[in-house]
Length: 509
Image: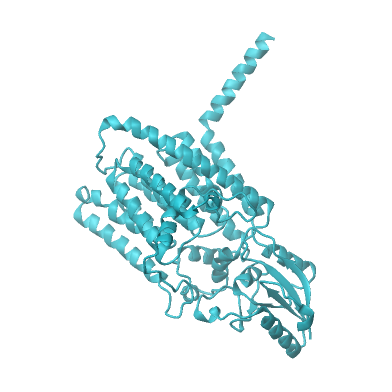
C-alpha cells in the first residue's frame, strides 16, 4: 500500500511537471477549441455581414473599392474577405479567418510577450480575447494582432525597424482606432531610434509610415452625400465630456450587466450617477496605467496620445461601443509590452530602487483587470452559447423550412435586410431606396424613413402588379395586418442584438 501510494505521488508529480512545462500549448489548444466552438454557436449579425456582403458582391478590386467609399473604414479587412469569397460565399469562412487572427494574437502573447505566466493566461482568457475580438468577425481583431506584432518586433531593437514600419502600415489600414494607434506609435516609439539608425534608413521608414497613414486616411473619408455619422459636437457639454472620459474604464473593465441582452452594457451603468462614477474609475485606472508606463516615457506618451484622441472622438463624433472602447486596453497592453521588453532602447527615468515596487503594482493591476475581464468574457460567452446573438439565422432557417427562401423579399429597414441577404446568399429588395441589394449603402438616400404600414402597402401593390406572393420583412409588427391585406407569418424578436428583429408577412395578389 505504501509503495502504491508513493508511485501514485510520483506519477502525479510527473504529470504536474509535464503540464507545467507544456502549459502554454495546453492553454493555446483550449483557446482554439473555445474559439471554434464559440463561432459554431454564434449567429452572424449585420455589421459582420456588411463587410462580407460588400466583398461577396464586388466582382473586382475596383468594384470593392467603389463599394467601400461610404464605409468609413480602410480596406485591409475587406480585401481579405474579398479574397476569401473567391473560395466560397459561405460566411463561415469569415468567421474562421477571424478565429485564426485571434489565435495568432494569443500565440504571440503566450510565446513572445514579456509577461508572467499568470498574466499571459489572464490576457488570452479575458473579455476581448475570448469574446469581443474572437467571436464577432470584425477588423478589431486584426488591429489587436498588428499592435502586438509591432510590440514584439519593437522589443527586439532597431534591427527590426522595417518590420515595425510594415506592422504600422497594415495597422493603419484596419479601422479608425487602429489608425490612431499606428500614428501614435510612429510618433513616439520611433523617436528614440533616430539616434541609433542611419539617417536615410530612419527617414525612409518614416516616409513609408506616413504614406500608409495618408493612404488609410484617404480611404476613410466618405463622399459628400454620406448619411452616416454626419454630426459633430463642438460645443461644451459637461455631461457628455464625463461620458467620454468614462470610456477608458469601459475599455479596461468590460463587465457586462448580468441581464438578458448583456452585450455593449457595463455593470457600472446600473449604479447611481453612473457616468460620473465611471469617470472616477477611469481616473483611477489612468493613474495605475501611468505608474506602470512611467519607466519608459515614449510608451507613456504613446498611450495617453491614443487615449486623448479616443476620448475626443467619442465626444465630438461617435461615442462607440465596447468593441471600440477595447482599443484603450489593446494600446495599453502594447505599451506595457514594450516597457517590459529587455531590449527596449527607450530611456528609463525611474531609479532602480522603485523597480520591485513597480513590479508589485503591475502584478496587482493586471491580476485585477484580468480577473474582471475573465468574468466578463465568461458571461458573454455563456450568453452567446445560450441565446441567439441575432435572429436572422433562425429566420432564414424558417424560410427554408417553408420553401419561401426564393420568394421576392421586401425589407422595410436596410439593416435587417443585410443578414437575410447573407444567410440566404442572395439579394433582397430595399423599399426605402426602391432597388435590390445586399449590403447597406451609407448615403443620404437611406435616411428617408418609411412607416411599416406604407411598406406593407407598397408590398401589396407590387404583389398585385407582378401577380406573385411577396415576403415582407419588417422591423416592428403591424397593429392590424388584416386591414392592409397582408397575413402575419412569423416573428423572430428574441436575441442578444436588440437592433435585429424580424416580423414576417405575406403580401398576396
